[in-house]
Image (cartoon, rainbow, N blue to C red; front, side):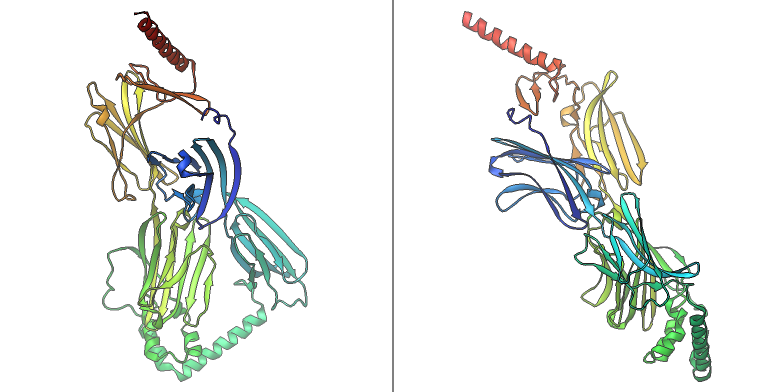
Length: 540
């Protein structure tokens, strides 16, 4: 082991796709030859360690789904399920085996698909086609199906790239067949978008045509369907009894239904809808949007429902999703049309009873946000605004340290959500401090070690909603901290250019070190004592 302690760490750069399972290897030696494997992981919000040795000992301070596994050839690797922004960082590994050791430093980054959109807009006296790929990593590539005067701008914010390309629409250009082509390493193929006019960019001629058609439609319905329109108008009045409110309602806000805004469209283009269905839809068009607050655990699959109606009664379902880094939409209608601008694994699915729900696989920090849904069916509509937050397990540790003339036991739960609860197996003078940073809680509890206290059986107990059961830690002395108990056995071994001395402690035991003069002195004193003992034994 000392022979291999001066080997350099090999640095590797790895780029992976979001929401894929990632496997990192440290050595190609089979587990039968291994002594131990250690992964030191440095992430954005925490540092943690995963380790395993040949005697069955293990450690995992990450508590986020990462694990050590073996291949069919019994070679060890680190498994990271459903890679997300939280997993970006530096993965340092060390594998020690009977013939030497391997050491790697792996910098892991991600490929993030951009949110894409395209539209037509006026720029002075000319029309411009715009194509945009927002918050991707690396930057997307944008091109046009038509040649012309185009410009492109790329911006970098929070590590994500936004690319916008603008093409001048020349006189006589065939805009009907105009499209923008977006390429990104995350996708297997290219994405093709057709620019659509923005609201407010409609020509005067088109506006006049639309107004004439609308006026003709209003006159037609006023002459031929007065009864239906009158009954629909009367049904807009509020009901005599309030609607029942479920237990998970926090607050409500007014909501104007899609159906109410488009009643003439439905009458004209959907003649198969019966009058009683139309009247019921008008009745429900002024229902309130129900607001719900939901808290879920990280790396779990989450299903959100919008209506309990079967799909056979549905006209369409729309989810408008507002996240930290992007806004997107997922929608589906009864005629088979669909839309998905999220491109991150979320999908609309059906239960065994053919009821629609939004499926979010392996929930992470990127999925926190507001999920607004609207389900319109033949007899009415449902609308919800769901605020989704997460439970994040804290990184936990415990140690003994000196504070002036006394010894103190410290227990810490870092960057959890909500705050963890810490208690001690022994009663005594304890204090606790809670801090909030970037939406995550850190709790630190300190217990004074009184004279005569049984520190060997001292534990700190940490409870958090993310875990099914409590975590129990035994405080261990920090490097350079002293112990008052005398231990008779000792051993010294060399690893990574450092001497490690265990045992032989009255008031000067160091649990680990870096070969300082004090450790050399301790080793020298031990050697002198042993040589002297052998000398006097031989002399007698």
